[in-house]
Length: 420
Ligand SMILES: Nc1ncnc2c1ncn2[C@@H]1O[C@H](COP(=O)(O)OP(=O)(O)OP(=O)(O)O)[C@@H](O)[C@H]1O
Image 1 (cartoon, protein in one colour):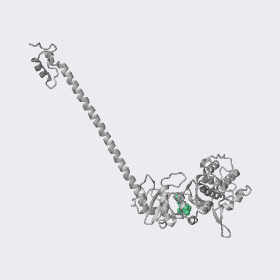
Image 2 (spheres, rainbow, N blue to C red; image 1 turned 45 degrees about the horizontal axis):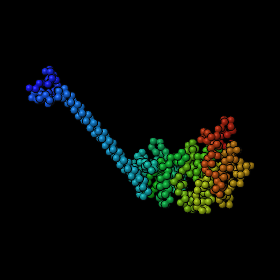
Image 3 (cartoon, rainbow, N blue to C red; image 1 turned 90 degrees about the vertical axis):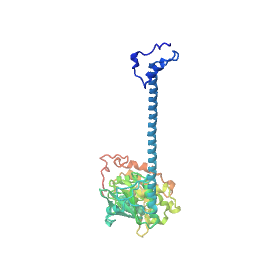
């Protein structure tokens, strides 16, 4: 008979933890088997069983972790797809709204606060009724000014927000073009010296462009209006010149409550090349247009420098770019001033009486020299606008954005108005 295995577990150990009756079956098998075929000891079986279970457990953990990670990834991917499709939808809606605005009418949103912005343009679509209410039904008393494209009204919205609303008639192609250009270009531009676009509105034949309000109106109305430039000191004038060294005319230079100058009609300025020479005369740009444009219809950066030179002359002399002479003929400020600008003994006598003797003479000569260069008939003789800027920065006091330090003792430190 075969000897029972020496390593048999003692009786007490038979009650040792058995897994699924394996102990009993192992004992039963041991009873009728030869020594060579003896089953492994119970401890080994239990250990093996434990190892097997551990492997199963690890496998289960690994599988569930992988599944969890995959679920998270799938969720993230679906979220990404959803976001992308939603953005595409919003974009297509925005494009549609701007494009539709060009062809037909856009359904108006209900109030001033409900608006839509586009990635392409920050133009805000406004409700006609709120514009009507804010301008007192476009009353005479809310008119800020009249331009070549229509009236500009002051709008006071609920909540104390004020803006300027330009109403464009729809009867001409150029109005529609200006409307589109303003929305396209101004809507994408944020610059401290360019008047900001607040929004737009389309109502029947009318197009409305809503701009930030420039409390001090245009440079043109400040210089040539009832106050005759009395609010504009020499230093403020130099600051305005610095702020606006671009293609300009003084009615397009608007002044906020602190006399910071900003350019308006940006869209029009860009497309001015499409205007006929006749239109330029009509829209009041005459006097700012460089001679080469009148000769061959070309506008270049140097034409902008010319226009800037004319504005600089307006600021210095307080005269309009084109004035009627006694014989009811027109004379340009350039032709009139040129001989006197280059003569230091005559120059102080032609300065705007509002600022006469309020500036350092050296500065006056410098600015006059810049103006003379800017309005040279030959474009290549005119300086670059960056050079113009560099020459003006040292003439503007530090508190106005330039680099000029003024000591309190300086006779020009606290000047507000001309002593004349
Ligand atoms: N944002 C604004 N804030 C305050 N006043 C403004 C504003 N925009 C225009 N104005 C006033 O309305 C006037 C007319 O402006 P508009 O831009 O329509 O024409 P313009 O620049 O004078 O001439 P044009 O149409 O020939 O360029 C300006 O001269 C200015 O007095």
